[in-house]
Length: 287
Image (cartoon, rainbow, N blue to C red):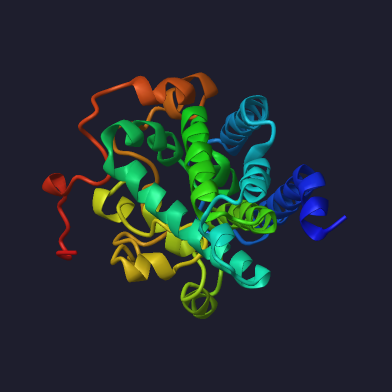
């Protein structure tokens, strides 16, 4: 049995192991060194955010039992995708694929802010009234399904190796939990880290109620993309402790903290308000 077959056979266990391990580390870190004081009940948010995670996990397994690794294995067997068409050393192909998938996730994130109908779905993630490790896994089921379909398309088009898919999924999940953590990192360490990866202080800016701040720092893993495409913002104007997390229009816990309200949120309100809307921005810094 080669490495790809071994990874394919144990993909679910690998992903779950890294998810729960990272979650436990971040949850403990939030207790030991929190960055912000909670604005609403942590028990309420965690119960409903984690219920949403369970719902999404079950839904994905029902709809896509083979998951992304199954698509990668099928594409490889058919010889589909750029990396299968051209002769690329396996190790190089894995690295290239992981980086390419990270860029696609960045572009997808921008798209979910730019298209009003997609922002309706994505605002479930942004409407969380606090910012901690559970926010990193809080997404509407329809967004989760669309994201998976986009990922399938990217895997087929690129010919992503099975090993690269598993590495990317593990890294993406772990980094999403990490950079949504309510954790304090010394400023000098944060300044160095964010040259390479997205840190909690860097991504927290993206969850500001201010539109121009929410329209920045889209990356989940590599910080390169925000710097390269001009969407990088260093700090929130109000500072991390004083900034308001969430969406201006949706501040009622029953609407954004309880699972029933979370599930219907995409279908509430007008479609005209969304993060990328330059005509309505008021940015005193002129950015």
